[in-house]
Image (cartoon, rainbow, N blue to C red; front, side, top):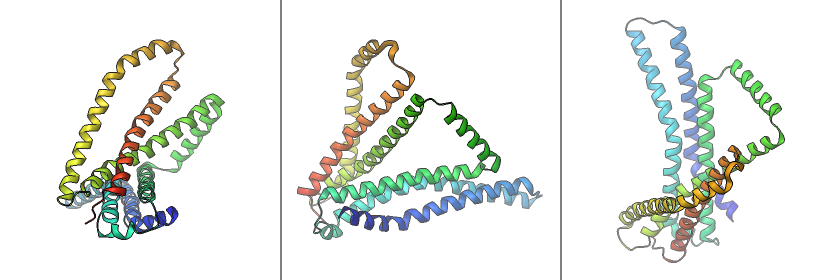
Length: 274
């Protein structure tokens, strides 16, 4: 059933995200074309001013589109969660033979895919602004030299770094979505003023997370000093990076799991649909 939920969710969200990705690529090409045009064509007077304004507008539109890929992904995730589970449509969704875990996980997975797609599209769009044959040839040569010079130890660390960053990114996506899902689920458990209470709980959760993080950081400073003395000179730069990444993963995972459990509990027992 999770597969069917994912299929349904991808179809519903792709209508927004795929055209947005296409707009980003088109604006990137237009920005590149406008840049080349201004370099090769000479205008005078009013023509030069109009060309400069046109190129500036395209560049601004491109920058806004880059930001919109992430903003729209977040907004779409929140809107889909509320409309699909917390309004009249929720009556239908909760009659399906699926658990709240499957409903929430399907939305988290789809949102993470669109976040990852936004990263890929934005990187491709930015590279297309400066890309040429010589750049790709040089990039290929550098990559080949790096792989030839790396030992198995450093190559293994590089792969592990990528895995750690990917895990942290996916957890960050889940935490971002759940930081909105949880207050919405709590707010909609009340009979009245659902959205007002949802906004209130959102800020309350943000304040609580910041307070807990600050307290934990202050309390952990003495242990960090002891750990530094205990490790001493045995700590390599790669070990420092691994430690920071795994610490960030553990930190994000704790809050993500807590928010996920609260969301599931509210959906399972205390939901008051509109």
